[in-house]
Image (tube, rainbow, N blue to C red; front, side, top):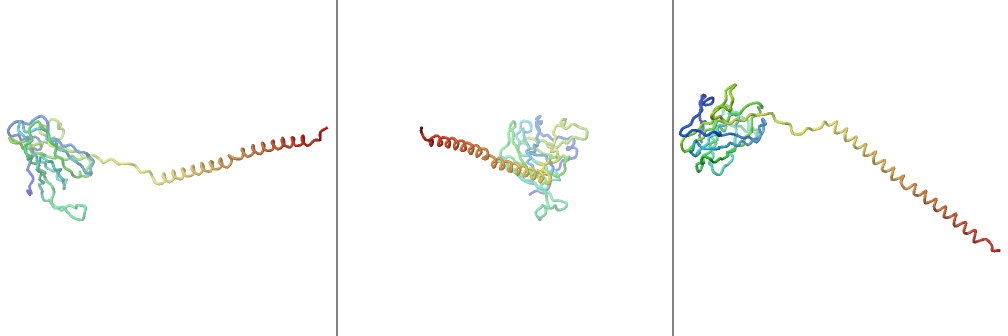
Amino acid sequence: MRKTLRAVGAAALTTGIVVVGAGAAAAHVTVTPDTTDAGAYALLTFGVPHGCGDSPTTKVSIQVPEQIVTVTPTVNPGWDVEKVMAALDEPVDDGHGGQYTERVAEVVYTAKAPLPDGYRDALVLSLQLPDAAGDTLVFPTVQECAEGETAWVQVAAEGEDGHDLEAPAPLVELTAAEDEGHDAPAETVADGSAGDTADADASGDAASAGASDGPAPALTWTALVLAAAGLVLGALGLVRSRPRA
């Protein structure tokens, strides 16, 4: 496996564009991340929207920023993919008790059949973004075609509008990660629970009291009715017991 990174001159990084053969089309090779949160794992989708003029695309080489150590390329059925490694100046902890001694410096996709001009394809890389909100990651990309190539490597100088560049490099601007959810303080939860329990107990007591008091009026009316009936029956008994004249 190759251990060298494709060299891109400083002049090319700022103002240069390499086009051999037909001129480049207006659309650019771009990158679309599914997240820009610093420190997050992300999928970066590189869109290849056209060839070199009318010439079909045969290879796309994506250079990886030095801040990134590992990259997992997504397999695309129409392309062969290769990771180009470069030695690290110092080993980097891999987070699992081991160390990285080299990094992925470049990912190269080679078309199994040339991608015709006028047809788009997408190449996806999976990686962890550096935990550096506010930084901009630059992915210089070289698009090779059956005739000619285009180096998407330009980076806007300070004060320059990136939209004015003819062949801008794909960029990802890192943003601060957003907090997901806010846990309430423990004392607030405890107080709320206590209040809810007290309210529930009070409601339960009231319900119990209501249930106990409910039958009393019914019993009172029943007793009165029975007493009245007794008086009526007693009066009838007296009338029947009188001797007839």
